[in-house]
Image (cartoon, rainbow, N blue to C red):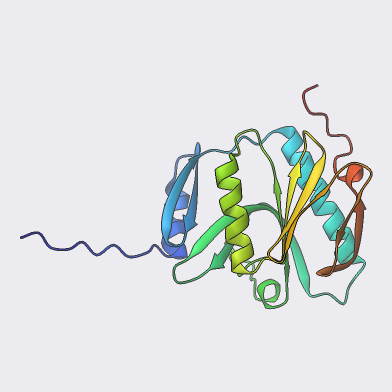
Length: 198
């Protein structure tokens, strides 16, 4: 008689060990205790420029508000957004605040808790299915706003759990209200010098 196999959810610590051993052409994520493997996301120069521009605008806002206890991180920011079972993902840009930002140490490999704002810059290899799941996971975990930047169309779509998605295009001003009180940035500034398809 065959015995039942004990399949328990993977922890973030186990995930990080597997991630360190993974081939360079794959990306691993931990979704509710389940290890997921994807082909390496195509990181173009356009993607990198957009990540840096969003990071700069958020950092400028944070520097202008020293009373805020927060951090802006970018470049596949490791973040455990849920526990028991764990969900640990990499984000393009994220703004963390309060305890999540304060408890990070120099040796920590990930932020422990959802960001206030998560920014995902679309890449050629992104799929609608994976992006939709990512947005749902972040909002369910407590992320207040997910900004999806589309360099090709120069738009930012803001997703919130309590409202319909809002599209900001050229000529519009992206705001972070109410979580980022006082944050304002013209959309074209976020995509300045970005040349897609040229």
